[in-house]
Amino acid sequence: MSTEPKNRTLLLVTLAVFLQVFLAALDNTIISTAMPTVVAALGGMRWYSWVFSAYLMASTIATPIAGKLSDQFSRKRIYLFSITAFMIASMLCGLAPNMTWLILARVAQGLAAGSMFAVSLGLTAVLYPPHQRGKVQGIISSLWAISSIIGPVLGGYVVEHFSWRWTFYLNLPIGILALVFIGRYLHEPEREVEKQEGDYLGATVLSLTVVSLLYLVTNFDQLAPPVLTLVVGGILLSVLGLMKIERKASAPILPLNLFRRREIAAANLATFSTGISAFSLILFAPLFVQGVLLRPATDAGLVLLPFSFGWASGSLSSGHLVNRLGYRNLAVLGTVLMICGFVYQSTLGITASLYDVSLACLLAGFGMGMVTTAITVSVQNNVAQHELGVATASTIFSRALGAALGTGTLGAILAWRVADDLKEIFPQNNGAAITEIRSLLLREMRTKISPELLAQLQHGLAHALRTVFLACVVTSVLALFVTWRVSAHRPQRHEH
Image 1: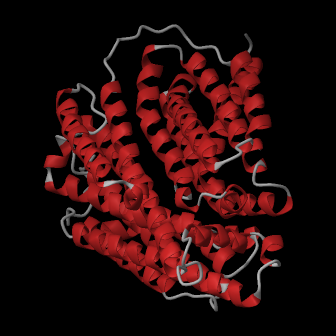
Image 2: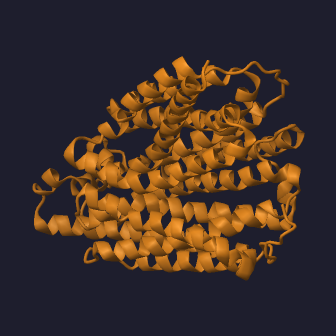
Image 3: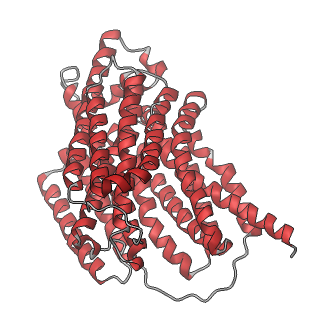
């Protein structure tokens, strides 16, 4: 094969990989803007955050498993299967008649997305020589940043001018294009594979534990005492079993030995706490804009732009600041900025402007960028060379776990506060309060509500969201205390 056709083939395969990484990343951000409209259409305010957290947790669990499988079997076959599964799951999401259907489809979509991402990282090592892999990995990383900017705005536009269902249908044509390119042009070289035992049992038990926790926090007030005791007991047993499994696993999904080190444990706990706060803002800020300020979905997407720009700016500036301030001081400074953002957001009510929400998002995003950089570099520079991969993965996993559990818990708190705050209006049926809140999220439904009731619903949702954002303040303060245990050193030239 001549050089020109070979380069063309490489370009097409690489383009397909980039498209799928971008889709997987985009799907996690575009839904944050669409969710208020989805809830208005399907109901289920109690399950509001599950649509987000189910995808996130499924993709997090699938990533290390798919990565292990891709080392043992054909990457091409796994990739084609993952792309196909992602498209089918996306179509099922768009066809969802209720929230239960949508959540289950999002789980399937998250599993496929995590698999696609894991295999795409392995494919870059197959397609490119070592001296070019860094450039390709940099492009893949930038796709996540780009998706966090484009996703909310695109989601708002699609919801407002078409339908929330098209936020999922958009995946189909690009997925088909990627299938054609990968299926026709990707040719894997033959390789000898060393069979390794993956931590599939640990991943399964961890998934069941997280799902049980989410179920517990979202249904705590509805479970009878015997059932509640059974669920809590089951969770405790699964946690103990998970710890035992991870101690024996040759390649554990949760490296418990790393957590015995004070700096590493503190870094992961800080990442977990800030993950709760940051991703809760991504999920609930659009709801505040649409339901409290009564602004369209496009505006709900626009207020997340300052968060994305702030995160990117905080990360970029941290590259220089970490050398001057050290890991601990930079993490503390970033956490303080996050606290300021959430405190400001918690003071906003129905008279707030988009500028106010944007300022809160900017502060929180800039602080998150600083914390993320400080924590990641601290962990990487405090472990041995052979532990770099698993140590870095532990921080990514901690952030995702915090996001999934945090948004699920705060979603349940939101539903409870809405029902409690509006019980004077609906004294005999608190569930009616949740139903009426849906009326705030669609313009045509708001016209059927009297001005007095509309104002009461706005105030009720604003007060409930204030509780959520105050909870984010608490978790950020917890992160502030934890960051004081992070290594105070500065990067040295001789560090890895």
